[in-house]
Length: 54
Image 1: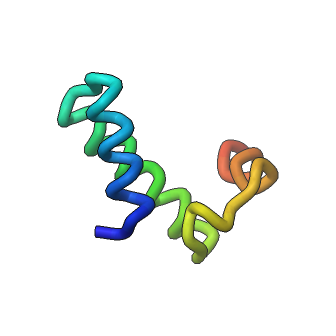
Image 2: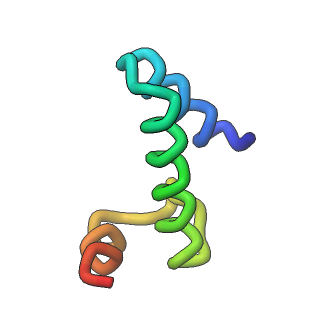
């Protein structure tokens, strides 16, 4: 597991998100990153806008 994914998982657990919600959020971020072929930490707000239009 990458450090970024581990950090996101820990942050969501601290906020008392359910295991299923955490799984869905992690999956969606992975799909977002895959769409651009880059790590999510390299993507910008403009990437988010483009992905939302997609």
